[in-house]
Image 1: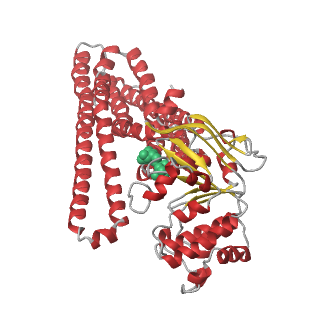
Image 2: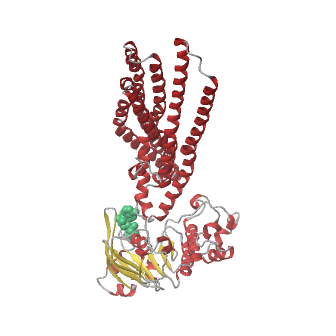
Image 3: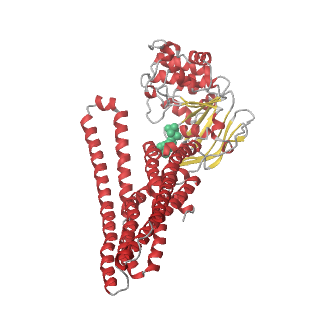
Length: 580
Ligand code: ADP
């Protein structure tokens, strides 16, 4: 019952399975103790009835009082244990699940995050885990415990009087057939509702991110209308989902309760034919209300359990994603980067088909080619942000696929277009380059990256908070912060997406100055957009159609009449297709 399938179905950890088992155990005990209480009641009533009808002596009070007190005590203890086993244990479990999810996410290749919708991922870590928490604490133990204790009680009732037992309990399997029949529908509704929820958060995020453009182009009304529609649709799907499962749950509950009517009917017949006396019927009626009670609760929960399985499968999907593993020892002989016949596809889309080139240590290797030819992809692969499908990439003779990504990245600095800045001070944003760097080191790196000049103009200098993702900084300023970070890190390999196109001339010169300091002596792989960089590069690799079209020093390539590079250089000024 609590095997691997169960564990996956509810996305439980090993400890979670144990908790569910403990919760179930105590629920069974609690339900049986409650039945035991009924037993005591039955014995007492038999005694009193014998006094009333046959003139037997009144039952002695002391044993009854002791029995009742013992029952109350037992009941208290078992309820307490059940509470601890169901609610208490689960709180730790939720924390552990979030941490283990985060741990797993940390080990996933960074490329995974490019593929996944981030709003969806957040929804899983927060929303889905929350929903599961409720299921783990309120449902699993109660539900599975009720299954078992009802089975035990049913066996006892059948052994005592099968006709009456049948009259009591026929509704239970019928109710369950009805519910399990509705399961598919509940799941489908839940998937639809969740997808609608993700669309709402996406819509809100999109609107907030683009608020400036939206205002500037007078599109507020259109965006708000779209957002409203998404919210209305989400509400509509939620209502429909609740209604459809609600109908089934209530129908199941009503059917189960019909058992009371049939028990009275059959019971009366049995009394009339002298097979049982009134007290037995009375006890059966009491017992079934007790059987229904946990089931009523369970029925309400079952809809939630069905829905939660969608959450669980989303969680398992993350757990199932393959993590990028590797050795934590990385001792390359130098830092030449060698691509050997590298093939790579994003999902279905083949981007690289047998790319080979070498980026030497101490040299600047420029990747050029039309946009979409795979320049950024090469840079990402060189840092093992994704794993390649064919060929190999080596750094200093070591295949990077054998190295733990985190270990590998300590040797890389990346200055990419999309600099990520945190809502912290300028100082701390630069310090990210090297954990534990002293203020002096940070300031030296900042100075070398030409940050001084703009930071001094900020109200609190380096202690100025820069807003979410550096909202208060210009493109060139952000890039200089990112260069300062890289300077501070001083890693032997630098991957550079040279997106200086948006900078003004003055800014650009400053960024260039900062860059030349960063790049000297390193293995530099640059996604080149500007002629100046390309000409200053030691080596040029021209990518086209997922392959290396040609490679060599700028002079070599230019001297060749048929060279693609030469043609590109000529075209460069008036071409839109070539991003040089
Ligand atoms: P370049 O840097 O030369 O402009 P890229 O390496 O960015 O080219 O992209 C190469 C191709 O791969 C493009 O067709 C692009 O659409 C596709 N691509 C890039 N990133 C992804 C991604 N995360 N998922 C799917 N396809 C991608």
